[in-house]
Image (cartoon, rainbow, N blue to C red; front, side, top):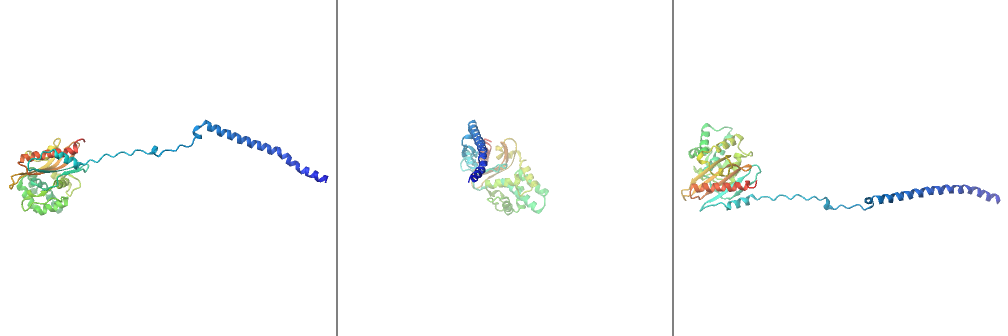
Amino acid sequence: MESSRAARRHRARPASRRRPVLLAVLAVVVTACGAAYVKTHDDARASPVSSAPAATSSPAAHTQEEPVPEPEVDLTALLKTAMDAVDVPGDAAVSVGVLDPASGDSAVYGEAAFDTASVVKVDILAALLLQAQDAGRTLTAQEKAYAALMIENSDNDSATALWNTIGQAEGLDAANERFGMTSTEGGEGALWGLTQTTAADQLALLQQVFGEDSKLSEASREYVRKLMSQIEADQRWGVSAAAQGTQWALKNGWLPRSTTGLWDVNSIGRVTAGDGSYLIAVLSDGNASMAAGVTLVEDTARAAVGVFTDGS
């Protein structure tokens, strides 16, 4: 019995010896945890930002205001307003179209068809040049002589000769279909001056002459432009009134109507004004005299181009 108790005491001694060691380890752990706790709280006190909850960013803080688009300009409405201020006397009627080739912006006032009078001579020459291109030839010396007299001097006999060369109305209408002139109809028989057209169609014709996207070759376009810039001195009126300086190219037309005694007076071309160049067509009829028609055409040209240049 005594030997059993001695044996148990002998086995118990190692445990009693381990107790101080465990206590020492425990003390070290407690000390380390306490130090970490103190450091954490000291850091929190030293850095208020770290202890505060993360700020929630407002969606509005990152939303940039979208730029407000500039309001679109209604050039057609502005043109109508400008034309309301133009004096159109008596039985006269007028229509005008303007195109800015640089931007493609355009506006037309009036949709009615008018007699072309001599402005159709540009159309006749364009049709002749298109037919010559199709045939792979250049104009003959005689055709060039007719063309110069027809455009620069507005010679009617030359116009009649080339009207017949292109096949009269049939030839003109075929060319105009390719030019995109959907509201122009050639005059009957030899009456080329009674061809019917609109201001919008005349802008389409001017685009064929002065634009790049044309059925006419560059050489053909340059040829027509050159003739239109060499108009005889006594015919330098009309849309040129809207030009600022001498940069213009035009063709005018005037025709007294025997049935009424009233005048058709028209003018088409390109003018330089403000910071650019503009294609413009003015058609009028019912004028009491040619002089009255010229005044109406020039007043209209200035008002219409002003819509594009005022404030630019």
